[in-house]
Amino acid sequence: MRRGGYVTVRALAIFAVAAALLAAGVAGVSIYRGRSLKPRREGIISLSPALTDMLFRIGAGEQVTGVSEFTHLPDGVKRPVVGDAMRINRELILWLRPRAILIQQQPTDVLKLLASDDGIPVEPFRIEMLEDLRAALRRLDAIAGTDGSGAVIADIDGRFDAVRRGVAGRNRPTVLLAIGRDPVMAAGRGTFLDELIEIAGGRNVVKLGHYTSLNDEQVAQLAPQIIIDVVEDAWAGDADKVAERQRVWAKLAVPAVRAGRVHVLPDSTVTIPGAHVGRTARKLAELIHPDIELPADPAPATRPQGRSEGE
Image (cartoon, rainbow, N blue to C red; front, side, top):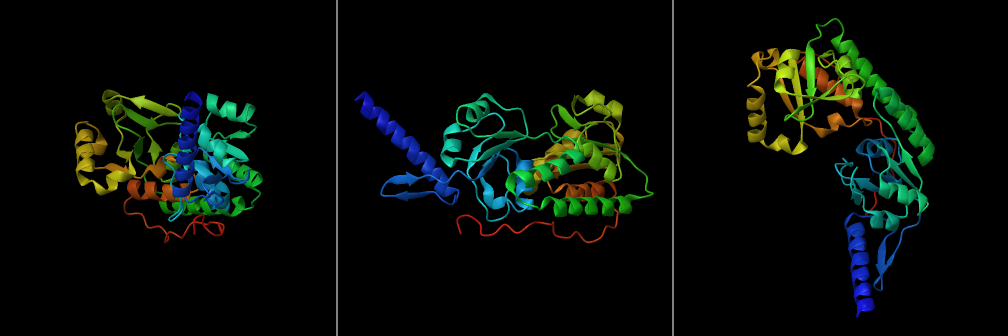
């Protein structure tokens, strides 16, 4: 009985993993006479939305066999979600048999086991500043065996230059870029968001390093002229939530509130240091300088991905 129960539980677990893979459209996984056939050990699992974005942009999208929560994939593309920064599905990762796992964090205990016991290389990346992003793109080319980073970096820098030209000579208002409200989590110095505020023609009101928690009194003391509050993507279709957040900010006696310059921005990609940062700089510039005239936004440079899995 005990052995039979174990076999049943294990069979159900295998079935669940196979069903998840099939639902995600993973190539190389199939069911034949009740047995699941594992894919070859050749893919890359990315546990960072930023790194996943970069992989697709440099032309390595077909190599991505697993992703993390909160990942923005190209339209029509599906990949199995293997976890997030804190929770990782080791069984699913072992099933996918990747040749590498990419992370934008320190390895967790599960990831250390995957590296030591299962022999899967774990590649950590640190992306704090824009130069870190450029270095990550070049390193991803080396890992994936592609050569798309040069074009993507040129595209990003070209967009930055266009924004810089557009804001040249303009007054630079102070900006608070918030990622969360209770308490306020603000982007400070030593972050790519601080650099993007500068490129977009603003001055970051937060002088402390990295990401700083602020209460309402501290925000009032900083007296930002513009507040950009980045919220979940789903808020784009919920006017009531956006209006309620505006009312919360309206309680503060700061120049941004008095001037009606509190912007609730439902776009989580703003907080991700991916290959789209050139477009993020443009979005920020249009909020900081609403009368700015920028050239038409070109389509992002992307290497051909080949056939999408599941087609």
